[in-house]
Image (tube, rainbow, N blue to C red; front, side, top):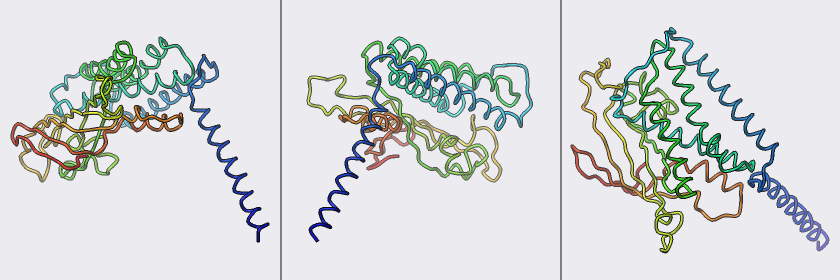
Length: 306
């Protein structure tokens, strides 16, 4: 019996050592290089170029191919969707740029290259999408989208230049709404489509890290206050399109939110793998107690708001 127990414990010990070794290998892989690692940098550049190219080709074939082409043109859609789509462009440009910069940081690239080439990824990619829109009869390039793309990139770069850290982070949350069933073609038929299309259920946030602005205090480094923006009762872009079986469109309105949040990037951990996971999920606002203000209803509180 003692021999069996000893053998079992020995096997467990060997397996635990192998597990620790595997974890160390994974963690070392995610650890940013102290100096320029050319192989990593080339891998980042090739991967980003391949993903962007494949995505644009896929969009062109799946999304745009079914619609007639036109000469390149601009449209003015700045008054649509209560500008929720514009804030979505800012959010996307910011995080695509942040991921690009962090990927170059992982390869050991200089801070200058991180800000120029990494942070610019979001703006370049989303501008390419605008070009596809510009050649489509159904849509058109939007100056408002381009400005929002530039603003998202500028929000990341300016904070790195000013504070050498990200103190204000755009975030996103979503909940399903009754409006999607009233206009499924525009707002989405499935949950996946609704997350992208149903602006009534989307909320965009600016999550502000309190400790970064008051470093001498005992405020937890991970505690944020978040200011949110949303809109409701939008069945179409300008809410004037008549929806069958709905009748007169409801009057849309804006929503302002105040809530708490977590800055996952500020959670103290030595694991570079966890830091990477936290960085990815730092795009999403955590559910928390929230105050909502609308002009027509005043203040409203939620114990938990998504």
